[in-house]
Image 1: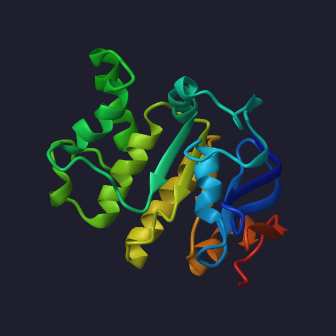
Image 2: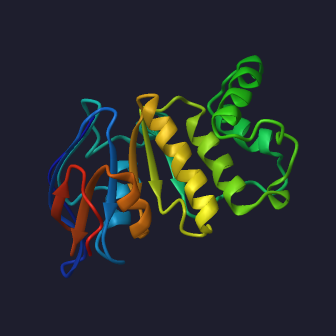
Length: 226
């Protein structure tokens, strides 16, 4: 599903983003990426979604080599990879339904199809009945679930979640993680970047530890030890 070979990203001659990363994430895996701030976690995510271009090395997603992806192919790539960030990036003047529908509208999906898909993904994230609410009427956890719903509308093969619980309390954190686990059970590959030691230890899934841009540990059912 995801294969990285000798991947490097430098920001000038002295600043390392990621260094000599070799990684294979299998279809349907749930993988957590952990490490201290500034260790390359966010750089790695940006490389996966083609927001950054590697200095050298290979990135393959689903057999598609994206290391030198053309700009007009990036939207197609991002329909295969749903992205969830810590900051919700919801449109404040649009309802829950409209925020989720917007991701389909910009891709040219017909209105009839949008009216079918949006309620389906809102049920998955336990937001059925909240379609007409605005972001300011939602809790932080509910807003993050809208973001996850928006990431699901294209039925991506991969969900990349970069610190999705960073602004949430323990209850909302648990709800968001439970939804990601449910999505993973459907067969979607999950790549979770987190600082939350309790989340990683409770998941008992594969854990990659980054330090100074390099993977220093890869545990199949590991714990966050740093």
